Amino acid sequence: MALFERDNDIYRDRDALREDYQPEQLVGRDEELRTYQAALQPVINGEQPNNVFLYGKTGVGKTAATKYLLSHLREDAAQYDDIDLSVTFLNCDGLTSSYQIATRLVNSLRSESNQISTTGYPLASVYEMLWEELDDRAGTVLVVLDEIDHVNDDSILYQLPRARANGNLEVAKIGLIGISNDFSFRDDLSPKVKSSLCEQEIHFPAYNAENLRAILEQRAEVAFHDGVLSEEVIPLCAAYGAKDAGDARQSIDLLMKAGDLARDEDTETIEEDHVRRGRRALERGRIKEGINGLTEHGHLVLYALLTLDLEDETPIRSRDVRPRYTRFAELANRDPLVPRRMRDHLSELAMLGIVSVTERNEGRRGGTYREYALDMDVELILSAMSDTVELVGVHDSIDPYLDDGDKPTTLDEFHGT
Ligand code: ADP
Ligand code: MG
Image (tube, rainbow, N blue to C red; front, side, top):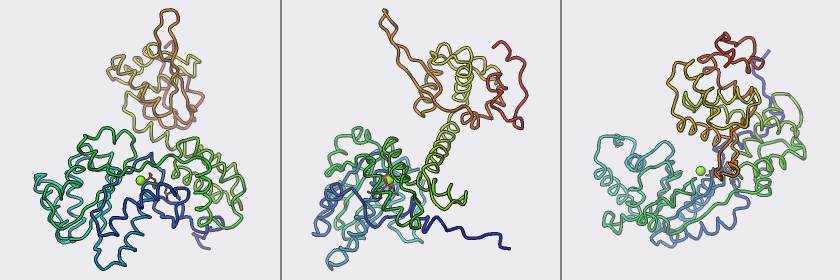
């Protein structure tokens, strides 16, 4: 008997739901695409290209729109003998400086055998090499820097668009396309960078439920066999997506998760319930990741709040969380943080959506204060916190939530905390 058997009853092409899939058409972005296309038109006219700045939250189609238009641009530019177009696409996730970007660009323009080391040169010489490579390309060069909000200094964003004006390039016509997931990135740019990079700004707004439905329908057509999706599935994924962040990627992920659950359960169709459970599973993954990324003191603060929540002490003020936190820190053999730093951790937990914050009025005295409560189910938090529980010990209040299997020894010291 075969150990592996195909189970393709649900999916026609599951890969169509993956991040790296490029849809043939984009739905619901006509206006943005028109503006974007117009900004690229000079390339076809053989003119100096515009610099373009694209911004909008994650998952709103910035990268997809760029890849879509650039592949058409390349194809259409090939019809003209006098246009020599090259496109360099670089995702800046993981890169933090102009230096790193410049070396990556040099290498992407150079042959395999002629790569430079990504450290050790002065920035000025890397730029020299970059100008040389660009001028060697002669024609029009479009440089796409995706997710540029990861980069801390904006030297490259100034140097590239100004290279010709500054006499660094003689023949190459260069256009920079900068893409940012962060709204505030643009405002933080220095005025001289802003004026050269942001010649053409295109904002991609978040998707609403109707947009998401259209996107999901297009994708489902490719990904699933006919009749597999029950009627409510796509509207529900779209509604959740619109409620969360208007992020198409998140909605597509949810649809895939629902499909995977249905497949694992050997059902013939995907139902509303798969979506609901899929959403919970994805949420758990996100929260777990968020908790894993916290520092040790973040974990101690969360553990303190969790136990107070279980004792019905929440919503609670930071200063009333403090004794429990201090005690846990001592049990874990760590020096407790000062109150203000401890409060920063509560704010961070709130940002992750693990903790809720309510602003309250002090009454007649007029000031305000904040109260914190847990906004996530206990088992989920505990499942991501076993190290902390091990370090501090099991507080009475969490005891009922632990499986007997993974229960560390209860500390007597806790009684009366
Ligand atoms: P961003 O770059 O803005 O973070 P992406 O372009 O990566 O977002 O889009 C996220 C996912 O959603 C990708 O899988 C993309 O193909 C898909 N997507 C986004 N917008 C559309 C659209 N208008 N039509 C079809 N698919 C879309
Ligand atoms: Mg992107």
